[in-house]
Figure 1 (tube, rainbow over the protein chains, first blue to last red):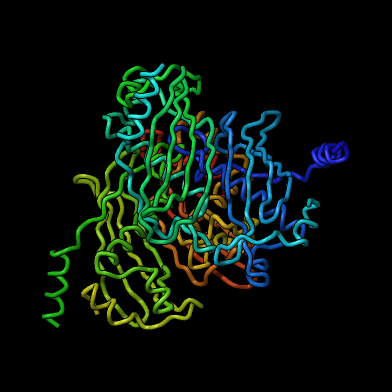
Figure 2: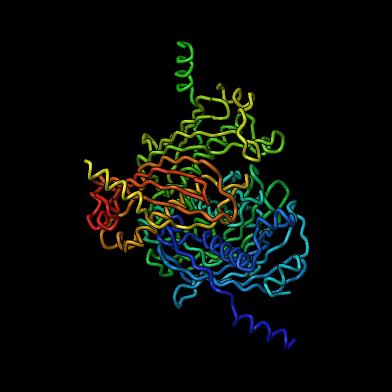
Length: 145
Length: 145
Length: 145
Length: 145
């Protein structure tokens, strides 16, 4: 228990490199802010890039393992808005793994400001949509499980 | 108290007309499903259309009242996927109002299947982003508050 | 020859029903206008809807015929901008058919104003991307060829 | 005349650094390819980044000069499709400048393959949409005019 908590804290300290996003015109809306749904695209780019850095690609997962990840749930809080041409840093922390589910904590930061935080639950499914256990090599690559 | 609860129940029964969405190619991804971020666009179309039906437009809110709504948080659960050319029904129930915040419960349904449910919190802000009390005419139009 | 020309003229007169689009926040950008790439989405919705009205769906084309349409080229001119909450009418005229290629003329209109005109060339391809002759039942449904 | 042509040729040789794009899930569609409208987003990111590298930002243009660029026309040819996780190189060559109009030639390349080529015409307008001459400092920064 104690150990688990300590490991979790450590994981937060040794967090992965952030993924950097520049805000382009396509991301903004008439309010002059980044349109709320587009943050989910940023978060997905960051999750995918984390996998790429670990040597895992969606294309290989699909072709070789006949697997893909789908989003099960997203709990997102918008603290402050982002604007055109902002440079955003996206942090992604893979968390607890249970069966087919993989939890990730993500945040979007600009300078010292936390703009967005999100709890994502992903499910590993076959190409037909059947949930299956997250393969060990993915858990291992993400250093979880 | 009793009355309040009854009114709430009634409100759930006399729910607003659903907003209907057809799934186009733009909404899908390589997995053959609707891309997860695009459901947030559907939900926003449904919320905006609910306002239009009540005689409120974003353009008027912006120009006459110098107000807009921004999303504060979104808690969304993806139960089942939607596919190309599906016809989706989106239900939107405005809920509790407190100060600048407006809660809405939304769901996306295909036939008898619940695909997505979402709890949205919107904030009424000035064009500079300062939160302000939701105007009475909006609360009244939405039959809440 | 003469007949062909006459038939073409007639076809322009008896144009198909327009597809109606409402502009939502997702479609706009920081300039307060509809973001230029989003008009291509509107045009695609109109082309797909034209097929649906003729009894043809992309899903059936994919599953039963192992065919899909991809865009070969797009020549689009933006005459006037569209704004949030505008109601747009999209006209689609299937034109000359030659082998795997299908040309369509499209326009986006608001009230009396022509906002956008576009010449699209689509190619009928197998799911692996090989161009194939447009099936006769599609040419027939679209009343061309 | 001779000089002009020579300068143009030189300009093609000393082309700007390409802008690199990774294809994410958001960019793909049910056909497994990048959705056609999304290439226009890539092209816009490349044009904006070219401006940034020259020290010009849209935000400053809007706030200080009350100017923005809008797309007047786009002539785009799709030669080959792009797929999930492709790395794409986008080349942008600012071309002839005449009054309020700025022409740019763009191409999207993957390895040795030309995927997309596009001729874009942009117009410099006030925030109210009135065309105005492209400011000298922009022509100078882009090395045209």
